[in-house]
Length: 253
Ligand SMILES: *Cc1c(COP(=O)(O)O)cnc(C)c1O
Image 1 (cartoon, rainbow, N blue to C red):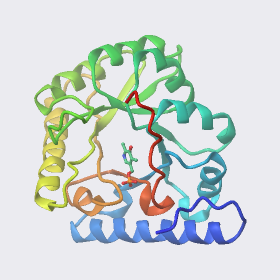
Image 2 (image 1 turned 120 degrees about the vertical axis):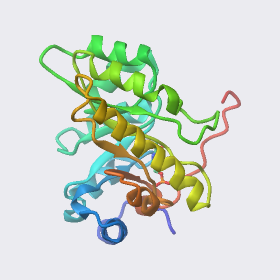
Image 3 (image 1 turned 180 degrees about the horizontal axis):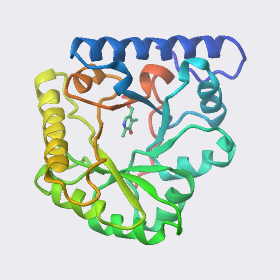
């Protein structure tokens, strides 16, 4: 698949529109196969490394109606923010947030999907301007990989209950990045675990958890598995924008 970042008008829009349609077809088929209503699964466009001009164009396509946008790096969220001013599409932060970047996240994101510590949650809560509320999700590390962000499943409910009780925050659900495996059973087990945690959270009835129904899980390679296990938001990058350039070698990471 060729990267869809060409700046000439016309063909790029056609390519992007076709890929958006293809993703919708995949989500729809997976939902119907699972006996679910396709309207219950939102598509979030993961726009990391995609230039703001391309993001603006894709979001203006009729095929993108109702979709969300996600950035996984705060730096990119901030850099593209001004260029996307006036684009009326909910923006989620889907990557790690350090406490010293909380104000940037609050300025440019309507939802932080990556809350994975009480400290971060409290910091967000303290900084939310009066009269506003920030949507948040608790990120859970269902694959157990040390390199993944997110709280361990055993700590997820306690954190979610704490987050749900903080002023200024509205807990909308749970998020995970699936196991990097081609084995659908392995990936599916992680997604099933996230769904079970969500069910337990909502059934627990703690204050502020009643609306925490979202399950943000599944990416370009495994969205069918995620939808089969109840995903309500799938996060898609490559399937729409093509392969991403390799990250620069900095020698510090
Ligand atoms: C990049 C990214 C995605 C999208 O991944 P693709 O495989 O390109 O669809 C989803 N979620 C997160 C957290 C990401 O960083």
